[in-house]
Length: 238
Image (cartoon, helix red, strand yellow):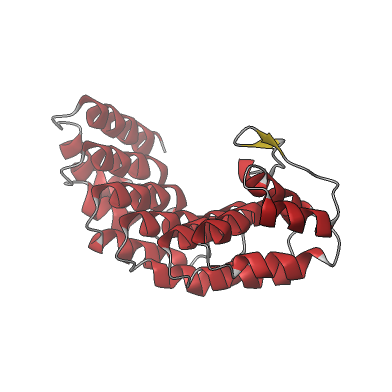
């Protein structure tokens, strides 16, 4: 279970007031700034039918801090279509903070209905939002998402976001997809990518590509050389 799915005992050192009525939680959120954020989590966890309209009202608050807190807290709520709809709508919020909070909830809960909204965020102007979208897409991955992520990786302009996309591609590559990564990573200036090219070859490669891997066995980076040697040994032993 994702840590976001676990009910926290405290928020910023304040005990979460689980067990209170919805009306009491409304009072706390609206009047007690010290307990507001903890009470929002208690509201998200409340199982009563009367909690949902109040949740929707805070998700629509003019205060972006309240919107973000409410969206983030939904990760601990029992999932249903209503929650999925709220989180999907939050992907189009005017605040990047709320958009990223929604991405994290999608990652934690695996909200598959959010796929189209997440796909649109892969072109976000914000590096951090793209990273959040990459991670969310990973959590609801479908086979066709490899090509989507591969395209995003190739056009990625941020080193941090490019690293995040590459890590996901490496972990998601299958026998039908790994070669595309090997071909672009075998001569990549990033040492980690050349090593991953060798690791992929070790898992999926054949004798037909031994000459390419042998080139990597003479790489300037020791980790790459070791990975290439392992791949050669594995292929020759098959």
